[in-house]
Image (tube, rainbow, N blue to C red; front, side, top):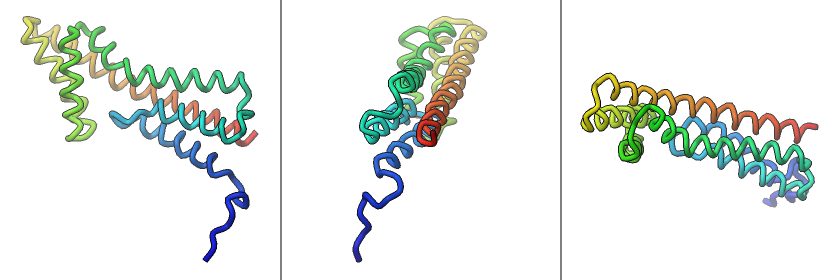
Length: 168
């Protein structure tokens, strides 16, 4: 049994890989620890490479890469920024991040509750009153959820733009 030549495929194999990466970017943006923005960025670059660096044009490529990089930054910084904005110390933020990653063994809920619970407990232990500690934990949790929503919107926007590039 002989496989058909890759040239006979209607769509280049690299284009398929690019769109798998782009879809994985959207899916990964809601899964903790999966780098949705980086997957989307990789998908754009693989597509650009597959097209011989001709599609999308430089203007569209710049815009799509900017959005994908923004998704990466949101992924990396949103949790720490929201914890700090809620009044948590740097020490609390670092420890809460580690506990949240351990909480992933219990799924996304473990990640969210582990992180927010750690912020609450550590801020309370540092002499904060219960209301301030709860506020810091709530802002951290809200920031993490907002980060996920923003990442979905950004990576989905990259996917839609690249579908437009493919179709047009």
